Every structure is written in C-alpha cells, then in structure tokens.
Image (tube, rainbow, N blue to C red):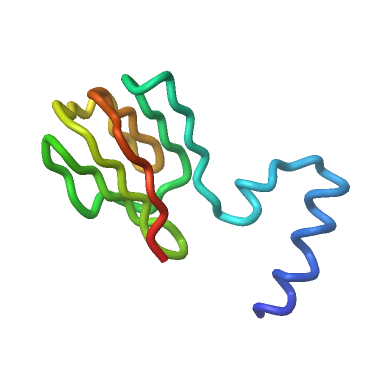
Length: 92
C-alpha cells in the first residue's frame, strides 16, 4: 500500500496541480509578524498554555513558544493563535 502512495502522489501533483502540502500531509504555517500564526493541516492539539502551543503532525510536532497566547480559532485541521511569538520549532 505504501508503494502505491509513493507512485501516485507525484502523478496527482503533476496532473491535478494539487499543492505539495496537501499531498505530503505537511502543515502550512502563515505568520503575521510576531502577533498571529495560522496553521493548517495539523493532526490535533497536544499542549496549550499561555506560553506554549504544540500541535501533532503526521510526523512529529510543531512547537510554538512565546507569551500571552490566545486561541482565536480552532477547527479540526486549522488553528489561529494570537500572542507574542518568539519561536516556531519542528520536533521529530
């Protein structure tokens, strides 16, 4: 089954013009300065405090550190975080 996915993904990307982040199950992170971060294609919330947000990914975690964090929007695969962001890190 895994070999089939490895063969079909490049074809889907080429012929249907699908974005790589969707086909490879990668997160899409959009930051506006140090004030907002919008993350798509995550697999769920692991940790949330006023200084840390950790989201599950297909392979590992995304860790965001800072201060005064507020979750403005939280949907099954999207999240909007507001606060002062000091670090964004990928953890395998």
